[in-house]
Length: 206
Image (cartoon, rainbow, N blue to C red; front, side, top):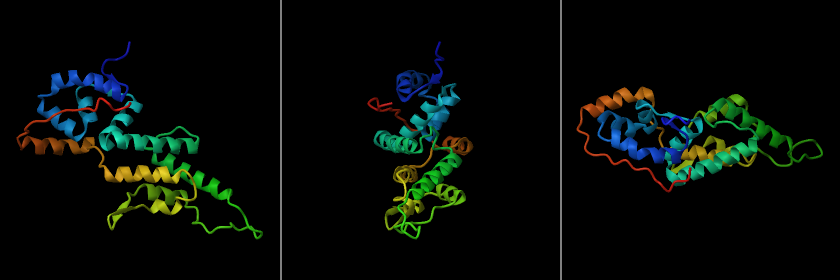
């Protein structure tokens, strides 16, 4: 029998929300937690998530329905190009895959009679360089996002969707971490919480 406290998808959470709101909608601590990180709030009241559901729900909360769709399309392109099933949250694995794809693409470059590539392209970055780039966020220059990964965009199909994901992540802050919660609760206790409306888009595709 399925554990009633386990959330397996966005749709599953939508179905459980009315009961959750009825039971905890007036609980100030849970309300504050939900505003900072709904996933942590749900864990606080005993809910668990499958890995897939947690990633889907966090993506929806951070990016909204349209951003979620854009993110998941880019994610699918990356996984298809890599031919490996992995989480983009695994930065070491992602760095390794990016390096491999770039190296494979460079290996297929057209050669001249002297053995050199026919078109001048940027050198393939080392694994350490890729890890460093992926550990940094794009920056805003004159109102536009600039990503150090852009220089490699033409080298392999894995780069453009990765740029899309990095821009989405830079534009939308991460949810509060467990380490942030005590300070958030303390600040909330010093102010009067007015009213909060919980809403989950029921038209969102899971």
